[in-house]
Amino acid sequence: MIREIVKMGSPVLRREADLITQFDTPELHQLVDDLLETMRANDGAGLAAPQINISKQVVIFGFDESDFKDEQMAARVKERGPVPLTILINPVITPLSDEMEEGLEGCLSIPGLCGMVPRYQAIRYQGFDQYGKPIDCQVHGFHARVVQHECDHLFGKLYIDRMIQIQSLQYIDVYQQNMANAE
Ligand code: NI
Image (cartoon, rainbow, N blue to C red; front, side):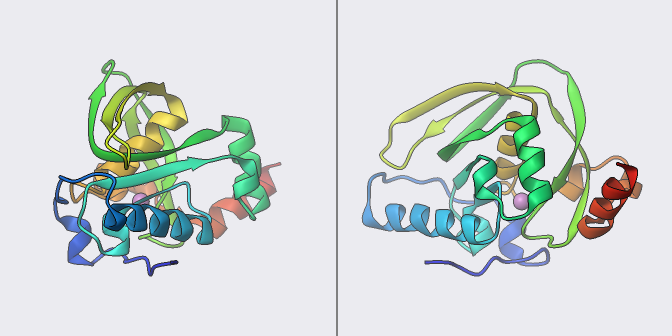
């Protein structure tokens, strides 16, 4: 079912989410299905359970260019490469080096806006899938950015909390206009 996405200001987005203690349950599978449907319906790159008002440690992310109706988004994804669809539960992130890089992020809970956010360039992430199977991956670049953004949602953090250059906060449509004009 497509669920309503809660926006910045909702207390659920500022709370630490509860760990999943039972895997492979009808309730958990339903939550994953709802996250997938809601993410796709909103042209999202990822979604965390608190964003549909469920305070549990479940995130999903992943896309390829065919997932985006918006042409500019599709082109950007093509440039940076696809991210395989992943369901990640009770995640733990470990940076692989101190190197940080800035990149543009948006969030379905802060509609219309985007900004430059520093993230670790390379990370290891561990957790479980919805069946309880362990996940242990090392990723870098945009893939690592998406994982860090989604997992932040489980600990009450939004991308704007991480911004250093607050002046880079801008409306997505203005950003896209500026990009189109620059070409
Ligand atoms: Ni977000």
